[in-house]
Image 1: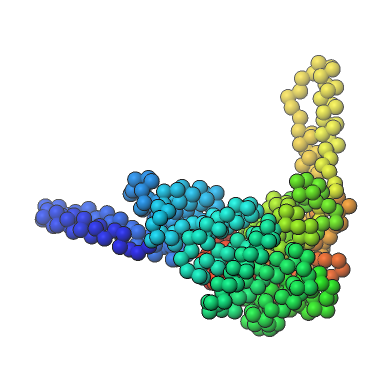
Image 2 (image 1 turned 45 degrees about the vertical axis):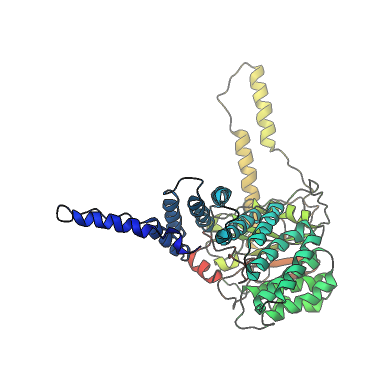
Length: 490
């Protein structure tokens, strides 16, 4: 939207200035309140910077000038939601954006960019919560609001990534449409690779491993091939995906080659230990998970020890099962102190193989004892003030599990250590994890690791929307340290 929406504000400022001049000799006038146009211009400039808190304050003050429900109020509210999004206050962001969208004139072509950005952010928020159906709907609305081919293809690509796990046939159609538009554009190789990589994951998750194995080298080559210098996060992501495809196609030599070029096992500082809370999903459930189902899930671990940007990469049992595994990972929590010595590069994007657990919840023996003891006291007519025996027992169990996880984690070194428990073990700490990274990965990085059978595929992996074709970087938010964010979200 252009800055002319407040053209008349200058006239108002002129009248105020004239009146003030008339009494200048009598008293020093107070500082003039900025006009609406000035506030709008200042808030827009802050949107282009890195201080999301300042942008939030600016758009909040701007929107407060207008009657709720009006066009200008809606613009300010939607953009306020954008600032909340960049601060990773996602629930508030979604509510604010939806409130503004409801009042944003749907037929006003000058607001198409605001509508597009709003729906893209809502789509990403839904994707972060693993609500891929809602995310797909929002990306579809963004596609409808797009005003040029680049943003339209970006929305199609984002939607197709969701549909790989909810509606593969629709994902195929979306990628076909995107390719048709891309054919008349002068797309850079990085953007071509983004489209090809989405198709590669579609092939992986629909069991077309031979085709995926042929697609893998194309993605890698579009990003510059198997170079050893000037390697960035997109490179190692493509190599990791290509290695998984080769492995599933029983092309072990190619898998090993790509794995070697991901740079796994290079970190010499810190350990990626097991989480304090690291429960795999139980077999069965709504997704009907089976002990033989395998999924590769990717996630990041923030400074506070919680996970973010959780997403399935591959699932042997279909998309819904992959999402079920990913939902389990969203609840995992690390102790921040355990990660202090590990560079953020090695925890912003972790991949692991998962299987479901056949174990079931067992009450603490102390809980049974506590209950029986309480019943006995009642027969003696003795009232007790309370008991924390059961709580202590439960805490002991939790502590013991955390210690066990920690011991396992301490054994997983960056030189390629791994943890794995099969579906029958019922272990609390399970899944295959690995830590490593490409020493030359530009801009801070990630850990990738996937285990299939007897081979392993590891590598740095980028945040999902790290290509220029997308309207907004998906990890440029407050959960990433400023220095790392500048490198990742360039």
